[in-house]
Length: 80
Image 1 (tube, rainbow, N blue to C red):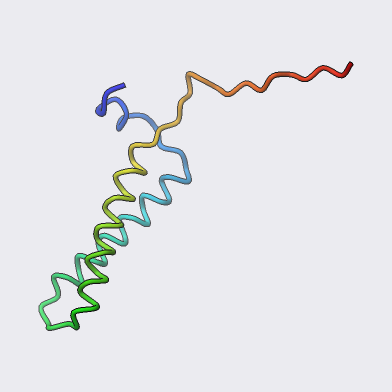
Image 2: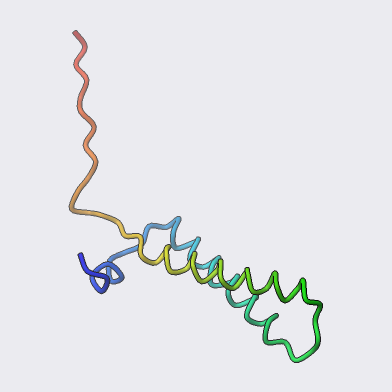
């Protein structure tokens, strides 16, 4: 499966929520970094980490897909 097909498949609900959280983190971090006022260095450093973490979480969450072709089948246990 190539990357284009992977990104076109549906994403499981948990990873959609995680993707949205990642987008929020990246947006908040970017807004703090781009603030037109002088901010303490530690706050800018934390915002940088937030932006990176949010971007990575978003990309990874978007790449997870539901595999509808293969369903996990548990072997039936026989009482005997």
